[in-house]
Amino acid sequence: MTDVVKDLYELGETPPRGHVPKQMYAGVVRQSRFGEPRQAFQVEVVDTPSIGPKQVLVWVMAAGVNYNNVWAALGKPVDVIDVRNRRGETEDFQIGGSDASGIVWAVGPEARGVQVGDEVVIHAGTWDENAADIAAGADPITSSTAQLWGYEVNYGGFGQFTRVNDYQVLPKPKRLTWEAAGAYMLVGATAWRQLMGWPPHTVRPGDPVLVWGGSGGLGSMAIQIVKAAGGIPIAVVSDDAKAEWCLKLGAKGVINRTDPAFTHWGRLPDLDDAEAFGAWMKGARAFGAKFWEVLGERRAPRIVFEHPGEATIPTSIFMVDNAGMVVICAGTSGYNADIDLRYLWMRQKRLQGSHFANTEQSAEFNAMVDSGAIDPALSRTFPLAEIGEAHQLMYENRHPEGNMVIMINATREGMTTLE
Image 1 (cartoon, rainbow, N blue to C red):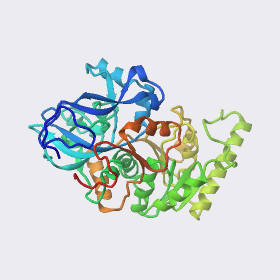
Image 2: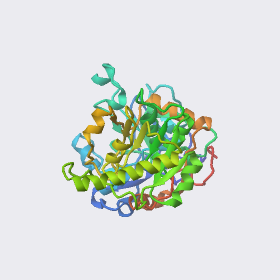
Image 3: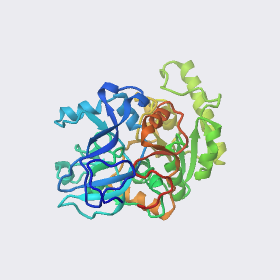
Image 4: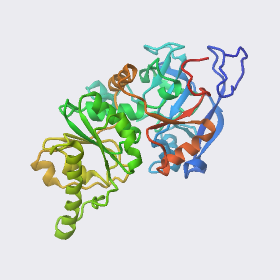
């Protein structure tokens, strides 16, 4: 830690405790650079954000890479800068990053449960605690005021400092390095709510659970959550090389969705087209038979963990058990997803939307990580200068298994505390 008071500090150079520099380095997206992530992201010097009465300023050590900031870089399906400008915010840039680990550097006078020097991780859910729907009993993450920090809310984890609400701050697991602690919260809390937040469809001992995208960030968390709850996770991957990763995390078995027998991906054919629908059903039944083979018994999944959407929802609805649940948090393959309503109502299946998590669920998941029951599944780290390349890998689906992280002020891998 330096004793020199300056307006800007280099990455990894620690300001004097209590001093907030006027400026900081950040990975920034601007509208003039919208496009592929490697061109959209640039490291710039910007003003350090100020904080409100119930807010916290965190000196960021590491920040996770998630697909929402691929969207921010592309400027679609939503131009998040334009959205913020239309609601009155003046910044003409986006500092993304919806995961972070760091040290509390300053606190507002009304901030609760947090103090300067705390080592923390941050959950991405934000909302107006005084909103009418929350006062009436709504889950905060379902509030009309709910937004995602580091995507819909500016000054995310890709800057040296980030501004968050006091309720977003959770204790950093002491056993984890800064980069591991910055990797897991967004995907982990999202998966936790999907699998544990929709009673009675929570994972029970012995429940088979189908996990799409098993080797990705979401899937890596879902496999471990199911296993920890006593369920039986069956993972789906696109490459046999990814199977070992899923098995290591606790999957009972793995299905490769590129198997030539599965010819039915995408939207449903017209149900009146008997030939086309018969061909689709042949592929779906082949996938179901493979699930039975991998599970080792003829049982359907009680829960299907969804996020691809358009390419897979018809299969998920077909596959899930009578009175089971398909729970979805994204649509990475497209948003126009068809379902055969006959299966939905006659077999009383549930299709449930789910978006991130509330503070209690985030804390429950964080406790599981702290206990060692869940591994952050960190696969690769990048310096801030390579933030565009990290998101480019994700955009091109060439990223490694698990979760990637950008090193911010933690400039050496393996740091466990401020040194």
